[in-house]
Image 1 (cartoon, rainbow, N blue to C red):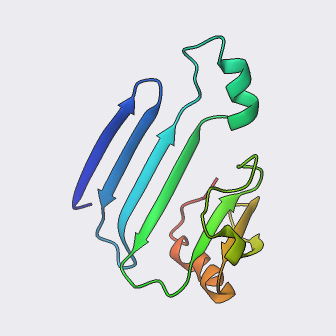
Image 2 (cartoon, one colour):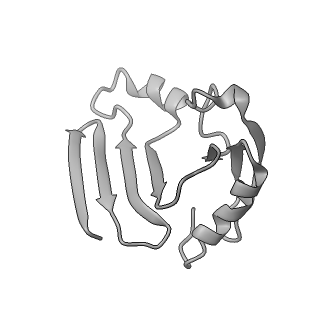
Length: 127
């Protein structure tokens, strides 16, 4: 890891982290953690059914130029669909990984999604 930056959104809200890494296929990792509203007993019963828990967003920035758009999303993660602006232009399909189940892919070109397991095959799990 070459450099990192942490941004504190708030003790009750979460944080954002950006890592510049020295990997052959990934140059930057961006993570955002958003937390449920636990500090308000009034809001917690409403926020849990809607948000379904804390959320961790991970964005990997590759060192190579992406020729098409592709997203991996956990099943049942979004209540009203993913917050991806071009979702109507993308094809929805199943994303399969050896160590993780319950993901789907939104993509322009299927061959890009088929290459994803190669990038995640260093022994780490997605669950």
